[in-house]
Image (cartoon, rainbow over all chains, first blue to last red; front, side, top):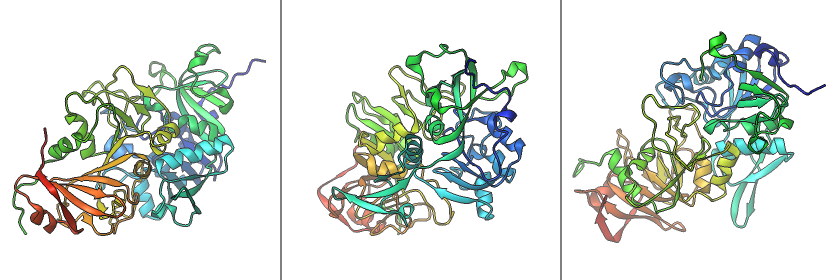
Length: 247
Length: 226
C-alpha cells in the first residue's frame, strides 16, 4: 500500500496530544512559518498543563511583529489565553514593547506560567542535538551570565563554555510550504527558522502545509526536510473553499 | 549639569557606525539604532547582511504594501528581495554566528562596562526579558559595536565601571558609538579610550556624564560622518 501521511483535518492531526505533553511550535514570531491552524486545533482540543517550546511565546498581537496590517495575528497566545500552558521554553517570550504586554507576560506576572529562557542559538542547537542523537554539547553562548547559572562549565583553549542539553518534544507542530504525501517538505524564504530542526526533534511531527503534492512533486534536489522526520501532514484549505484567509 | 552642545540624533549615530563597515563584510544589525545603519553605508562599500531570521543578503525594507510574510528580518519587518539571497534554518543561522563567520554585529545596550561587558537584554524593572540572539552574537561575531544614546532620558550613566544589569556577554564589546562620543574598548582590561567627540563636546564634558573612567586619545578628534 502506498505510503501517505496525509491527515484529513487539523482536529484529527492533533487529536492524540494529551494533558502534560511537550509541544514544539515552529516559526520565528511573525506570520510566516507558523502552524496557525494546528494551534487553533490544539486550542479547541482543550488539553492542559502543556509545555510549549518555540522562539517566542506569542508576541504578534501587541506589536504586529511579522504580520501584515489588518490581519488579526494567531500565535501561541491563543493557547495561553485559554489556560492550557504550564511552561514556556523560548528565547523571545515577551513583546518588544514594555508598555504593550502579550498574553504570556500577563500570565507570567500572575504566576500562572513557568519560563525557561534560552538564547536563540542555544535553543536551535538543543533541538538539533535532540534530533541528531547528541545528548549535550558545550557552547560559548551565555558563559558568565545568569543564563549559565547552575550549569556545568568547562574551559577549552582558555575560553569558558557552558554544557547545554538536548531538547526533545512529544510533538512538533511545523509549518512548511509544500509536502509530498511521503512527508518530504519544502519551505519558503525566511519561514524555515525552527521548523526543520523541530521536525527532527519531535517524536511525532505534524506539519501544516499550503499544498500537498504527489511524490516527485518536489524536486529531490530541493527537499529541505526529508520525510523520515515527518509523521503527519495536513493541508490548509484554500480561502476560496471556506478556509481561513491567513498568511 | 547642562550639556555643552546638542546631542546627535539616532540617524547620526547610525551614520557614524556605518563608517566602520569594510567592503565585503558580513554584518548583523540588531533592532533599533543598529537597523538604521543600513541606510548610511558609504558609497563603494558592499555588505552582506545576515539575519537570525535565516537569511544572508537582502534588499532594503519593503514598501508599505509589498511585504511578504516569508521575507522578514529579525525585527519582524518585511524586506525586499534582491538577487543573490540565501535562506536557511535557525540552527544554521546560529552556526554562522557562533562559528565566527560574522565580521561585525551592531547591537544596542543598556550598559557597557569598562572591560567591554555588555548588558542589553534584561531591564530589572520589567522582571522578564527577551534574550533572543544577543548572547550568541556577543560571543560569536568577530567585532561587536554598540550603538546607543550615551545616557537614557532619565540621565543615569550607561557606560559604567561594572554592569549592574544582567550581562549579555563578558568582554565582548570593541567600540561604543553614542550621541556624544566614540569610545574604544582596549584589549586585556585596558579600559576605555575616548577617540572622538560630538561637536561642542570635549573630554571633560563627556567624562562628566560617563561613570567609567575614560582615557583620552592623543588623536582625539571631532566625530566625522563622511
